[in-house]
Length: 381
Image (cartoon, rainbow, N blue to C red; front, top):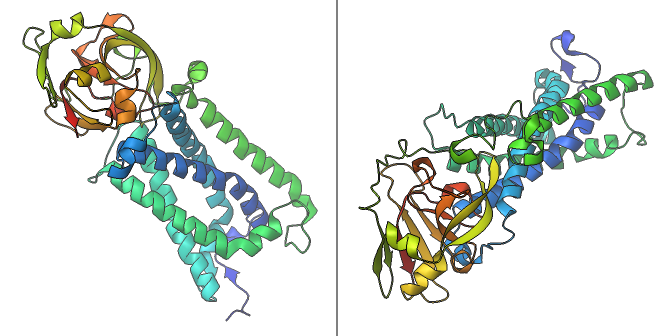
């Protein structure tokens, strides 16, 4: 069967540039985009859901670490969309090749392609919808997106291993023994690659400004602007969506547990030494924004409760529903002088949607873990 010459059906698919050289040229861009997207997504997942052994090893510096990695994650995923479409256009006639399976190697290639294409389309589609906070599916986004990411990487590695001879043959413009199309097709190929590159540049420049704020004036396709929102800062979950009603300043209490537990009123918190920090808040949807936060250092609060130097802290919100109402910090973040229980944002008292009366703000931490409406700080041994 290996000696059989495959035929493509229907004949209309036999167009120019549906060839291995063009597919390899696009793959040189698509592969790195997938790798960057996967590695930065892995960082994001580990920061949001760290295993127990990693909690105390997550660094609090650089303060812009999560802003950079998550911005790259969304930017590389967005750039991969036109690249994947171009790649599929180049190779789709092979889906109709006959016979469908010619050898074990060909069967592995077809399997890897099927899993890779399905997984890649799923990852990019759900990822883009997540940036818009639209979830038209019954499953939980984070664990499924994470699991399928590993599946795509496995399929990609298998695909590269199976296609390595073809990739090697077509990697450079002038490779000996290649099966390249005749020279007259070279200008068309260059034009196609230039168009794909222009599309990648366009979608990147019109979306990356949500995290790379110097380019925010170019935002056309991004679902949100980093300057838009209460107190000039976007909000993902409002107080109403979190089930947080009106919190009366006179009734609010912060409970700090530990060897010497105590309780503070809002007036008590305001009377403690206040510190100003300039920190970005960076969310998994890809947007980020730096702001000035004013509040009490978390390390001062937990030291008063008798916390040892290596203690972790569990932060508990007053919100009634939704994920991430409880977050945990390792001692690196707890002891960092930039980690605050913030009372003010950009010189003004927090509004309810930003976590009034008190919220957590810490360096190099996902936005979903910057807990709002904080009611308890629990010192963990």
